[in-house]
Length: 439
Image (cartoon, rainbow, N blue to C red; front, side, top):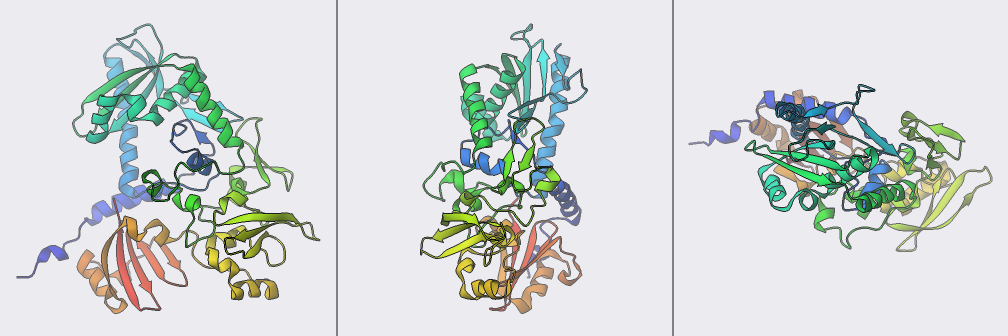
C-alpha cells in the first residue's frame, strides 16, 4: 500500500500564509540607524562594527518574526503583574508619552527601556530599570542556575547601560519560561566600572574605520558558524562584498558626526546623509578597504578627472582597482562579482575596452539566504521531474505559484516561495533541487 503521508503537505496553507505575512512585515522594517544598547554586550566587537556599518542583518523566517512579537506582547503582562503586587510602573516617559530612551555619541549609540518601577518588594523605595525577557525551557534553566550576568551577558550589559544613563542604581530582570509560565526575577546592581567599559566600547566601535579583530582564528568557530556577519567577516565565494545592502556607511567618504541626531556626513560631496541617502549610495561610493577580506590595499589616489581610487593586491599578486577610474570596479560590481571574477581576463578586458559594467550573482542572492548547510534538502534530481515532485510534496502546481523572490545567476536560477520553499534549476547540468529554510 502506498504511503499517503508523502502526499500530505507538511504545513497547511493557512499557517504558510500567516508566516509569509510576518516575514513580509518583518523584512520591510528598516534596520536601526544606530548601535543598540541591546547588543553592546555581544561577545564580538567586529560583529558590532558590521552591524553599525549596515553590513549585515538577520535572515529570519516568519515563525521567528512571530516569536519576537510574542516577546513584545509579554511585556504588558509583566507590567500588569507588577502593578497587581502594588508597584508603580512607568512604561513610557510621563513627560513625553514615549518610550524611555537613552542616547550618546551624537545619537549613534541608543537604546529604549522597557520602563522603570518603584515598590519592588525587595527594595520598595528604590527606583528600578525594568527589563522583561522570555526564554525557552533550556535558556530559562540556565538563567536560574547561573544568574543573568553569566547566562545572558547581553541582557546584563543592556541594564548596566540603562542604569548608567538614567542615574538609577538598580534594575529588575523579569523572565518567563515560555514552556511552563514559570517566572524568575533578579535585582541587578549598577556597576560603574562595567558600565564605563561598555560605553568606551560603543565609542570605539562607532569611530572605527576598520573592522576590529575577530574573536576566533577559524570560520568554523562555534560563535562564527551561526553569525549573521560570517560571510562579510570571513569572505564568500559568491560575492567579493557580501553585505546585506550597500550603504554610505561602508564608504571611505562617510563619517558619523557627534553633533546629535545620529548624523552622517559625506566628505566627498560636503553634505549630510539622511537614512534615505545612505541607502542610495552614489556612484562615487568607495568601499572601506577592510570590508574586502581576500586582498590588501597597496595604493590610493585620484585620476586626472579627480575620481578617487584604491588599488588592491590579492594573495596571488593579482592587482586591480575600485572607484570611478578606467578599469575600476564599482561597489555594486563588488557586491555581485566573485573574487576570482575581479581578475578574470574577459571581465577585465571588457571593462577596459568598452567600459562595461560587470554583473554576476544577485546581491539579494536566494542561495545565500538558503545555503545547503543550513537548509532542509527536500529533493535533488533531473530538472524534468521538478514540477511533478513539487506537486507530490506540496500538493500545489508549481507553474501557478508566484515567487516572492527570484534570482537568475550564471550557474543557476532560483525562485523562493511562501513558507521558505526554494526551487533551483541548474541549466548546465540540467538538474534541479528543492530546499526549505530551517525553522
